[in-house]
Image (tube, rainbow, N blue to C red):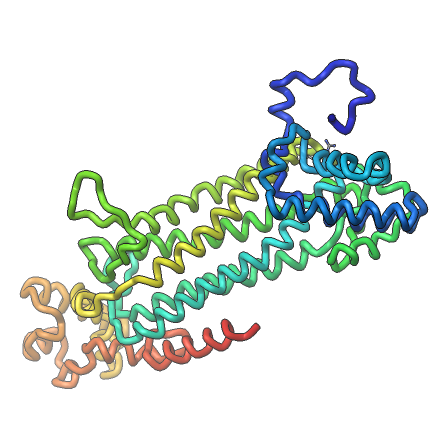
Length: 459
Ligand code: ARG
């Protein structure tokens, strides 16, 4: 039975009911709705609506339902209740009879759903933080073993300067560290309880809302009832966190797809995260990574969708807001899945060091070194840049890397070039020289790994 039958003489059209009901997705808020209801029952004792005895009976029944729900959450879906709030109330009435009908005193589904969703988000965040940290740990573990794996770094997808695979891993570790701190930040603003805001104007019972917030594990209670029931910033924030992090994961996936391609062949992905072609027997496709990259799209869509849903809404609650849940749930599930999958991909990844080194040696990735060498010999950088450009053209003509050009050929471009140019052009020297903070020098990389370990092992 619907919660609001009194004013209506006709039953809802079956098609409208299907369109309007949210139980098929908001059943995921069952646990939060039950926890919120227990706290509300306690508040009702303090204002004389329930006796202590009645509250105990309600709390026991709600605890029983919570166990039921935890054991078989899908059982809820067999009900034709409108939403999870109606379902919980009906189930409570089934269990304790008329007493259950008192629970909704002074409460609205508007403050109830806002509370449930915030509680859900609060419970979700630690799980996300832990998955983000696990992926960072997986990246640092790969970095640890690939400090010697020299490969080309790219700009414009052109070989630019040599880096190490470890340095690449640490770049993504940094992005994920920011994702983690965004989640921590989101948590702070999530920690304010809307319960006791009523439908929009506040509850008519003199409830101590700070106490109520405390019972629910919130740091404080919201300051304005109208805002409390209309606010979905926390949904937008979590979706933004997800959208940004998914962009990171998508770039991670794209890089690895490229490294794994026949053209680069810098890595080999494990059989455990790839699939074959139904036609071409030689194929081993990077499906896990392609799906991470692909799923990024739907998370961006969820964020954009929610922004647009909220943008024209007048205060306070409007049914449009029921649209907040499916996108949020899907985006959070997708993000978690992708974080786990990215860690799994790293787990079996093999770096082909020989091939990486070979590629780092091609493409004139050490041209900047030659310019810096000239600078060290007193040539102004702009001039050095020009000289090296000409030398590269000649080297391309001779199909030689710079370090294999005869000394005389190099000296034709600048008389200051001497025998000591060759060690300067080595991959080793390219890396070693980038020793300022954050650079690719082996020393910097190894201390970055130590720092990441320290940060990730703490807590
Ligand atoms: N199912 C609704 C939602 O998710 C619950 C709140 C309904 N409130 C109302 N006044 N109809 O938003």
